[in-house]
Amino acid sequence: MIMRGNMKSNIKYTDVIEKVNKEAVKSALSNRKPRLALAEPVGKSLELIPFFGQRVSCGLFGISEDYIENYQSLDERFVKNKSSTFFFQAEGSSMQPLIFSDDVLIVDRSIEYMHGRVSVFSLDGDMFCKRIFKRNGKLVLSSENKKFSDIVINEEQVFHLFGVVVAIARDIQ
Image (cartoon, rainbow, N blue to C red; front, side, top):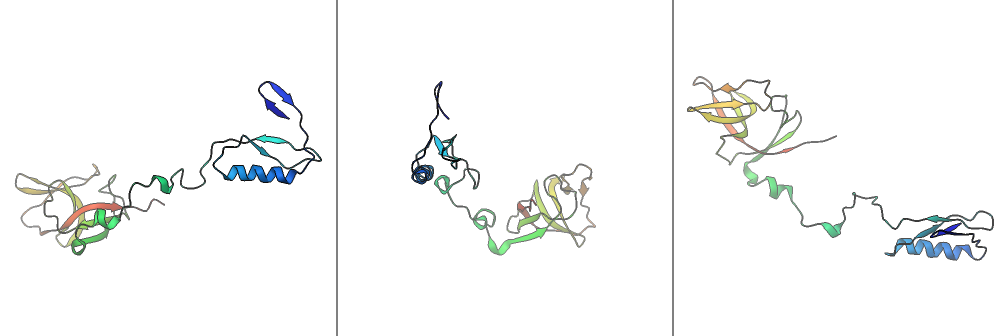
């Protein structure tokens, strides 16, 4: 049965169905938006089924090469100085919600300004990652997780800045 406005009409196709099916497939694969698709014939009649002209993406949710604005190299974006860039794997919860265990920290040793920046450093021989502030002439190490208290570096402690965290890589699986 085919609906045309408010009118119904019964059409039976007994002629060459294969030719009609080929036309429907050809139309569906072209840029035209066919209104009807053909179902397999039942007996000698052929039933017409609505075919939506709206295409659905089975790829990357509508992303196609037509919409690519530019290409991005992760090296160009995050590695400004290759000889001074290093990776570290994070461990612990003191920097959550910014940094989680197993995140990869991309650290640039060439950045000297560290005030307010998340940095990797050695404190008394152990490696850490914290946000570093200078307050009243002293270094203060601050966690992102408020459950952890700030650490004020005293004169007896040995502090060496390794570098500033410039990016974080995370496996989301």
